[in-house]
Amino acid sequence: MEKVLGIGGFFFRSRDPKALAKWYAENLGVSEVPQDYETEGWRQSGGTTVFAPFQQDTAYFGDPEKQWMINFRVRNLDAIAAQLEAAGTKVEIETEIYPNGRFAKLADPEGNPIQLWEPAGISKDTEETTA
Image 1 (cartoon, rainbow, N blue to C red):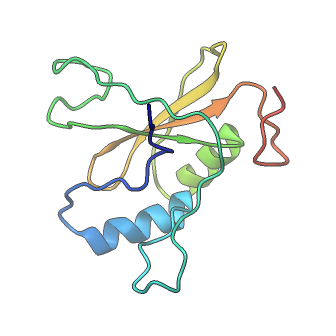
Image 2: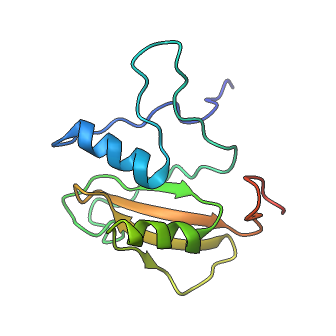
């Protein structure tokens, strides 16, 4: 069976797409969409991606009006949480450490839920995992 290689884009509605794209670029390092074919877009490091539909009535995303939550892999959860909080974004780091790593939740300026994941065994010095 031929399989997809990964996620090639994530498309969603926004009240102010330019401002929201700028927030993601400035706060999470997700490059804005290039305006030409010569400029490369945001390039992810390799790693696990979980593709998980949830029950329609899940409380996991917070606001029941939100239909999606994106999870970003991070190298250093504490550092990025501090960076986001310094920029005015509230971050809730989960106290439990799971076998697959550590997690935090936040929302973008439009209230869209975001989860940050520091995989277990990740080296904080590189983008590679040590496990």
